[in-house]
Length: 159
Image (cartoon, rainbow, N blue to C red; front, side, top):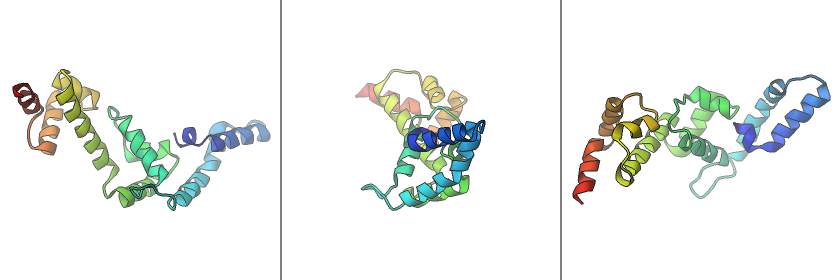
């Protein structure tokens, strides 16, 4: 979550919990949620060489490490204590695409890598990337690349 990346906010929430004598940590964190949105706004000025803020980089990192999971924009925004509209807008502004497009791109890239570098069965690769059936994975792969996963494997074995 967002606060795992920002221990100072978590520590402040814990201190608030103790100072208030019984205020739950979740309530204390809720108090800090608007603060996190403000902090993220400040971060928009601090960009890397690709023109992205640390927040968008963390979101991309989170998505790459959760490729097998069904992740909605709402779930993602909740994980970073932001509103879905704000996160979606910020992500699109900085990357030129939606969160869903980025997640699909990363899944397809990982699938291609595994198809070329491993002997894992196609269905197992699809399942490891969150696709419900091997057929659905193969269809999405074909839509993305214009050829099937088995064609990648066949081409790889020919040399």
